[in-house]
Image (cartoon, rainbow, N blue to C red; front, side, top):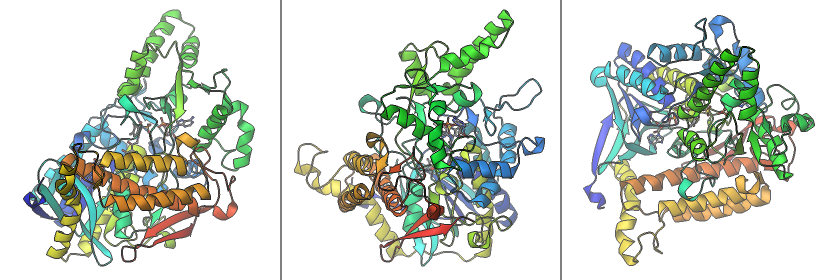
Length: 624
Ligand code: SFD
Ligand code: AMP
């Protein structure tokens, strides 16, 4: 592919929203409202089609954040302490409270737009758990339609671009003034000029070696197409990051990655070892070692994992989700035989719908193994680590909180602005505000979208990006195509060539390093300074070899950049796990050289990369 054939497309806007997922749709909806009032332009850019992009591409079976404030079911303080406890004390109260106070209105919006939410006989939402309500799957179609409609109502001031892969931030001194990327369908290089940029490109998957292999390769819980673009974008702009060590290791139905929440919360199911013992009971003494968080209810997600890992280490696997016992128990509670039969039918369909709504491959796994959940338990296991701050992880950008809730140290002008002027973040791209899920990410996008429009109005001057800057970035972004073009005839197999490395091979090597040295699934999530330092050594070679990535077409060009983004996520993770000299989230990772929690590490571990010097700085930030 001849890179000279690439046209350069320049798009000017006011607010540039990078990503087309839940947070992006919230931002597009809210920002369009304020942009209309103030004659501002809003542009959304997604690497895929918004109806089917991001983590909610397959649909969801529940909305995992709804407080029911108007009904007095819960208070914002309840939710803040729940999140702080689940993350072993490490959370920004101001950010979590800001999302919690607005999220119910977003859910009501989804319902108004047509999302079918389960209702009981009195018309109340059916709760899966204290914070979670059940839905019938197709939320992303409905939410993206709402966002696109809002943009259309802006007329020519509203636009969205799909199938554009964003790679780099564009800086003007200490301010972010845009982004560059390329079409994954045509030979076009895109330059977006903007007064404010909102990074909402999701989390990172496949940084660690996945459990799935061969015919199952690519199967994961969080989507493989969220590849760390958010982290790379904010790091490269020089923004401060937080909680890069706080990965999320979800426990899932084995091999097909089906979620467990509905089984534990709605069906009240138990998980046991192969002998049928409930390890959350038999091992609860261990939780004392992680007080006060370990002894609070519910038990933090990582500690639920940890007790299960101890069972496996002692050879008591496999671990089973007792779907059979759960359903039979619910049916046994109904004395009337006819009513009990009707309930059994209802529970069977709810059990299958849970996965057909969200993780179809789990339903396929059951079908292909002749598993009837009401008769046969299913194996569950801890997956490979993910970087997703909207669930029970916390990694993302360090952002400004709301003036009325944040301590002075945590507010610097505009809600959700990073430490880089004009650059905002939300959803999985912003850190230390866990358990926001689809509804909370949408809501945080709304908060950031409104604040970013205010920033645009306070900075009315058009931004400029020089032709030299554009030429330099175009050269860099398209380099893998040039490398392939120059060398692919050297050998008779396009994938084996001493002059370059193909993206898939590059990814396999990165995943191997992270799995073996940074505490992946293969080593029981254990690591130490010695292992991490060795891992960093190998990452240095990866950085050198990334200069030799080769792409035979646009799809491989995207794969090249996805893996460069993953490599940066990997580095910020290793550096921060090294920096935090304690073990705070056993079940996510365990430092064998610092096997317990320490009071002097009850802080945020932040990091920063300096675009001028290429130096990394590690920073401790107080929990306020
Ligand atoms: O229970 C670029 N999530 C669930 N949330 C719920 O509320 N209920 C559930 O039931 C949930 N379950 C669940 C969930 C996720 C997954 C994968 C499964 C099951 C199987 C979590 C939510 O999905 C999650 O919290 C939000 O979606 C996070 O929102 P956001 O906006 O931070 O991320 P996104 O939606 O993935 O969007 C990212 C967008 O960025 C685009 N993108 N665009 C341009 N250039 C690039 N380089 C880009 N890189 C990425 C993507 O295309 C996407 O549009 S349960 O199991 O947790
Ligand atoms: P998951 O299916 O693991 O993605 O979880 C979905 C929702 O249920 C999230 O809000 C989890 O925090 C919650 N959840 C899952 N398992 C449990 C459990 N054992 N106890 C309490 N909450 C849980």
